Length: 488
Image (cartoon, rainbow, N blue to C red):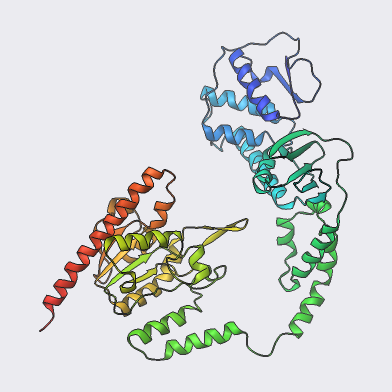
């Protein structure tokens, strides 16, 4: 029997090296005892080496390695032995990675999910306290009690997010320390819990002020913030009292509701009146724009700042359709004013197209995003959202009646032609909308800006300019044909 003693710091990396060495030596899983501890003089005991199979190098899929190393951050005392047994079976081809019918694979995947949840909770529920600093950088400390030994896996997130300050996150076993831009780990010393500071009282005041008793859902709150994390949250001492007082406060809020209709209701009333009012040409387009301000056809209207309607003359014979507003467009209320809009404007100018003479809009009128800290990251809309917003695009097309439409990106192609697949293969082709209007297919300028290679990005910018030059040629031919067909 062989004993392997892993260090408290760098446990996963040490396990990885020892697993490779044991596999090369042909040591079977049942002949190894694993434990975590410090102070061992030799990682291996003096017991005779049990070898029952020829040695070999481990060969595993990358996804398997990442998931196994995540699962090794679980508190299960048998995690190292089980992981070693599984990697031997995976390397031998006795089991296929991801096969949930295998109990060992299923157990490891469950352990990895539990670790990922615990890391997420640590990212969400660590509360820093400011402490005295010996240098120019501010210093903070926090105490957290995770369910699993996840400090080394979770700490890089804080290093990225709080790189301009020094901080310490202490847990019962391991302490993460970030000083001068360097992240280090050590075993936790006694008395590592930092004292409370004045900012915690400010945080409790803020938490109490934003607590909405009318929207209280205790089970949902505890599902997201389980009670086991309350011990280290400054606001936790307020929660019981806020929950207890919620019914009374909610009733007081209902009794104090305003008698005048809110501004949003008045805005919707104006939009409904505009919908009923008959109008033609630019008046009808202006009424449609007002009507869109109260759109609730899909859930995207909730988190978005405002509706971003199309803009351009009602007499435009050329229409450009993008995918959806971005962060800048959502704040400004106008289409194509952000970085992608800058590239679009530049390509239009190079192609000899005046933006003031064309109509520019999007397939979706609201910004679909996922919050990431202070940023709002673009999210691709689903089919239901595209279908719900198609009504607005159809109304714009009905009023503008363009001779040629340019679909930029998969979402625009789906809204105009019914299919958003294979845009790169369809690029440069002339297709048709449901009513027969010609549709020129190209990429969205935002996709060019996302290319990491500068040379590749420059090449795609040139191709996009060439696409718009082709659009100008096709549009001119269609306009000449229409002029020739009209009666003198």
